[in-house]
Image (cartoon, rainbow, N blue to C red; front, side, top):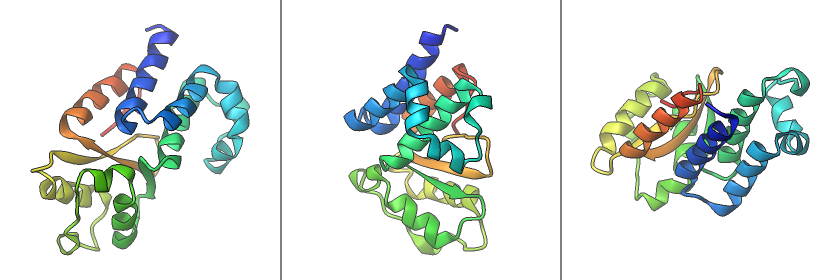
Length: 169
């Protein structure tokens, strides 16, 4: 795969998740097309993740950059693997697509002793009529970068991510 094809796929993934939000996509294009400028401008984000910029691989930096852009623009929320139920519900409900999709969470169905994986399965059942899933933008960490996607979108996103050596679940 050419570098140009990889960048186009990365931009396509971001476009699907953000609904081609102009402001978010401008930042994504800066991350993909001018990575050194982006990394210099947002080096604090990488430092927070414990990443030493000169030593990190460019492909992974761009993937992480897109994850951070999704978070910054309200399309994703990064949650620790041991997240509290109340925090999980709060941050999911604050995602930009949540209200637009007309979603609600029946909190009593989520067991406080479970974790994110179990809660996402329950939400998949709750939202089966809307055909919406909570997806994870894989960043090879003990945290989740969660976003909302329609079932068909999620399938397309998973295929695209795989093509560039990344993963979305």
